View 1 (tube, chains in turn red, brown):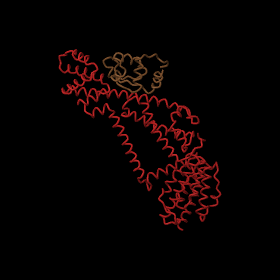
View 2 (cartoon, each protein chain N blue to C red):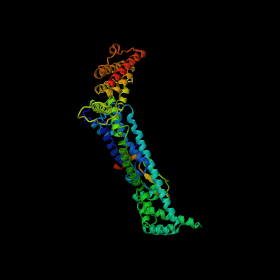
View 3 (cartoon, helix red, strand yellow):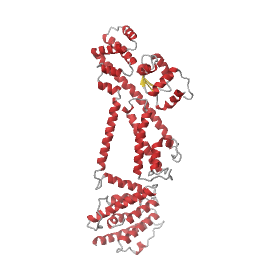
View 4 (tube, rainbow over the protein chains, first blue to last red):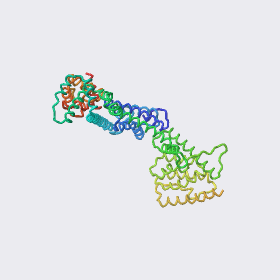
Length: 430
Length: 82
């Protein structure tokens, strides 16, 4: 699947596709699994099952990308995973194989479905029993209701003769309340047997049970209330999320800041596609340009005529996580080249004042090849932006080597820092 | 559930009913046309296939709640399709 030719789109589009189909699929899967259980949306377990089913394809999509079984920018892979994630788990789709024993993860999931179903069955029974208890105690306490029940049962009984015989044959306990309880139980059982589905409605029609109680307990009222509240909360959450994303976060909206973080992630991602890297490079380069223009206009510098100075993220926000990677001794060669190309191509005084000290400090990295590339980048910036500030001969000829001691490296770092101090001073005095 | 059991009419009636929807014993009595003792006997035979919440005695079988667990649905479909 990794070599599959597919339209390459931003990863967030693919994740949105997987999430959308995941939600639709989860709704239908949960309804199919629990269709034997009326009122199943009234239970927290059903909702947990729904959210797990909705999240599962998204997690699987991320995981398959993580193990390089596919690219999370492939639109076809997004459709395949969102529609066939169950088959992927059971190894039924050729070309997409989960590593190791991952496919066995589906088994506990199936066991969970059974547990939820069993729990719903127990709760349904409990609720029916509670409804019965409540209604029977209402009838027991109210003679008028008792009379109404007797009329209702006699007019709806499947076998009136047998019912009358049963009522006539009830023993006299010598206790009026106990006698009434026995009579009520006999009537109740006959009503439930004769009208197993409509008994609640008939009780309501006779004025024995109020509409809300009947609706709540016997007409899926709880499920409707809980589903309605769930949908309302979901809508409120979306509105809240939109409002939060428009809030200010250090000169940027949360949405802009999120987009910057997204592109930083994509830029450093080891197994991203060429096109995906190019998209992030374009985004970060343009943001770097805006940041540079905004900084120089604030400090009274010149901007190109006809180019408006847009609000962009500060240089530090843009580059800090990228430059930080250079200090990691096992950073990938591709990432190092990409980060250094970005900062060298985006060179300008406002950018340099953050980038150069960071690059100099990154010379302490344990990898001599990374040190060499950083040194080359520093030389390129020096030639481009600070030609008047010559480097000391020893520093210009310095070639990072494998066996350099920390002391040697520290000496070079201090020499670079001294050069930068004078170059920056000269630049600001102009 | 390794081998297909030989099931009688009553068992098939109960399985057909609970395959459609979980229900209480009163509804099951009405749907299958069984009497209370017949339903108790049938549910006892099917207790490895279906889930029964409540007491399986003649006097209280109406209050039991009977369902077909999702994991057994395929097996029951196979039985009903024979």
